[in-house]
Image 1 (cartoon, rainbow, N blue to C red):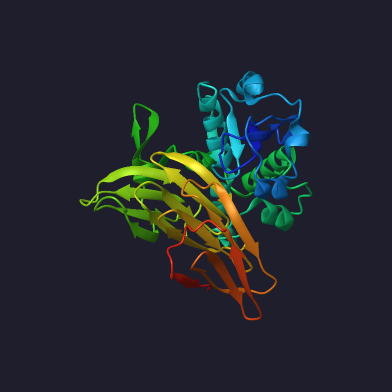
Image 2 (cartoon, rainbow, N blue to C red):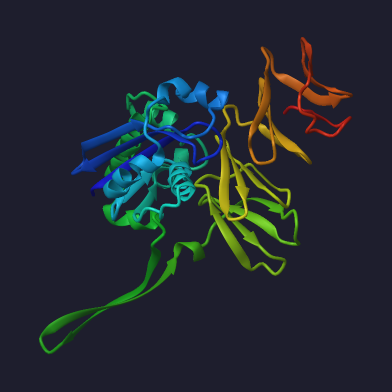
Amino acid sequence: MNFVALDFETANADLSSICQVGLVSFRDGEVAETFSTLVDPDDYFDPINISIHGIDEDRVRGAPLFRDIYSQLSERVSGAVVVCHTLFDRAAIRQASAKYQFADVTCEWLDTTRVVRRTWSQYARSGYGLGNLAREFGISFNHHDAAEDARATGLILLKAMREIEASALPKYTGAVFGQELHRSTIEAGGHTFTITMGIQAGEKFAADWIYAASFAGSSNGAYLAGYSGRVIEVNERGDGLRVYDIGAVPRQIIDTGTHLYLLTDTRLYVMRGDALHALIDTFDGGELLVAQSGFGLLEKKRMRWFTPDGTYAGSVVTKDPIRRVYFSQDHLVVETRQTRATIKGAPAWWPQDEEKASS
């Protein structure tokens, strides 16, 4: 199977802030073409993002805007099978295209996290991050360089294809599931005929295990998260309203009425309505703490806080595991077993006298 592997890096939590593009074409199981360029995101650079990929304002100075390279991307992916690792890259190109009023690219998307989770049972629930898979499979690459990430994604797909039948790939792109119920052979007029009876169902109607659930914030409905990596919103009668396909099982689902937060082992998805508004990497799993004017990510040795739409507001990093975080009067207090830090001037997104102990 020929395909194109695609990866983006972004300047901040806004997925339209693309600052690097990496595209690698695979033909007959080999790398055929690599396209990579820095992109001026026409937006600010968040320190968190810079710490991940090392791209800042200086590196993109003089680089093209996304609108300047859109036609090159569109030509390379149009009508192709486009492979990405999680839905991040698919959402990024969609939001960047909308930012400049371009049409969505026309292609068939294939998420390698879904392929990996169904191909190797040890990665069904965790361990399917790109970096970990590359280490497990002996793939050497420069993580968080867009072209390198795209190449590693393609190589992982090739490895998976050697483990499964090529005919099984359609189920990862949302085509159909089929099951044969009965097969019989008859002879007539000197010819042999085989009659097969079976059923087929679109993937969205297929059965799934429910691994997480939460009530909706502004209705009597609920959210149900399945093994497939889909989160389904249902109303009070159980009718499906919308599906969020994040490719991973969330550990926490919180709906505030204005935003929906889906926390997995590796990322926090901030949804607004039907759209992915922000995507935040989590490095130690962490716990999501949501309040009226923002939310926090409490990790083992770090506490980060954000505005409701996912804009980074500040962080505290500790040497020892965090035991407790709370607001007291006009400052934020972070405690470990050894020390207590008081941070003045921190945005008071957390209600007074409310505290949370880390797990």
